[in-house]
Amino acid sequence: MTTLEIKNLSKHFGGLHVSNDISMSIKKGEIAAIIGPNGAGKTTLFNQITGYISPDNGKIFYKGEEITGSNPEKLVKTGIVRAFQVASLFYDETVYNNLHLAALSYHGKNWNFFSNRHASRDIEDHCRFILERLGLSKKAEVKAFELSHGDQKVLDIAIALTMKPTLLLLDEPTAGMSPDERVKMTRLIKAIHEEFELTTLFVEHDMDMVFGIADIIRVLVRGELIAEGNAADIQNNPAVIEAYLGYEVL
Ligand SMILES: Nc1ncnc2c1ncn2[C@@H]1O[C@H](COP(=O)(O)OP(=O)(O)OP(=O)(O)O)[C@@H](O)[C@H]1O
Ligand SMILES: [Mg+2]
Image (cartoon, rainbow, N blue to C red):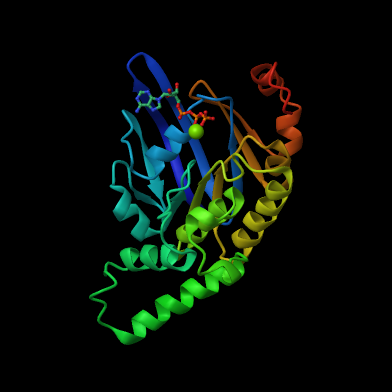
């Protein structure tokens, strides 16, 4: 079954074609990487899938329904949830409050006027469950600014999980991390992908992570999808090697 279908997506900023006739089909349960050099259009592709910008041409279908041009809030409700390239946290709030606030806003309530006692308990339990699964329980009362960079990125993913994603998009989850933190994050993403039964799409420059956990890898260069396949297909693809010459990442 296809979760996300992208057909002939095009977007330009002035003379710059950031999405150039991109088509791809993302299957339910897939964990997939999007790779490509800086400025290839990876984040812009995520921005179009999640409704932050509209494509000039082309269509996006989610579970068979067209969602092209829908707004981000509406898409989150349908299960398309993202974590950003730069974590967007309330740095003066505790870890728990970051989750709780996100969950309340997802459920359309604010925490002073929360009316339904049972729903409130469910939300709190759900937040505690996510913290535990992501190894943040002991830091629940720590303020977000006091966390390590690695834990801040984990918290950002925890926040995304409060919104009950079906399709989770992660933009550079290991950016700026130490080698140890990267290994941990890689394991964590694989684990939550399985436990929360997600379809996961991640943008990443860390090739150990990409080749380690992605079922399928798609390569964007100058807005074009130049290759897709498993690790061996991609590592041996002449167009990919050519595109990465000088980057020494493969
Ligand atoms: N709103 C915008 N207006 C104009 N140009 C933009 C806009 N957003 C992105 N760009 C340009 O589009 C190109 C693609 O940007 P994008 O952020 O999608 O790249 P990326 O593949 O995510 O790169 P990185 O790996 O560095 O995150 C870049 O040249 C960028 O400067
Ligand atoms: Mg980017």
